[in-house]
Image (cartoon, rainbow, N blue to C red; front, side, top):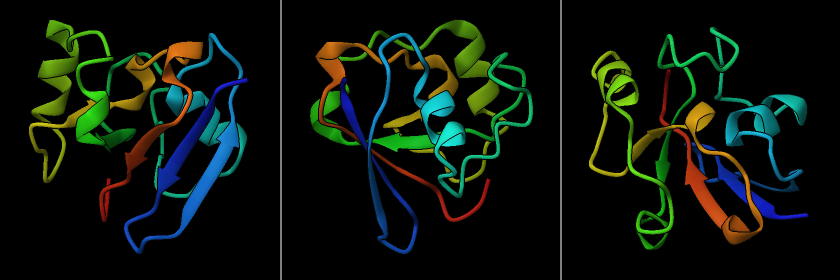
Length: 105
């Protein structure tokens, strides 16, 4: 099972085994990681699962879809490495992925 590390704004880390096929957001919600609200349940209809992807992983992820780009415009404090965690499907290739959570959603 791929391991994903979620880093809270205060630096607290949660390294979790997440089943392939789930989204990074689903993995966080199922494991009680604070800081990912996921108000829309993963439908890419809000921006409450916003994360910052560690730079080394940006080239591994598929590009942002137009709807993800649009939803990120609604998020606070976005950066070039901002993604919606509901749009990142966990695969074996993402074993070791690190995402940081914004101070607020």
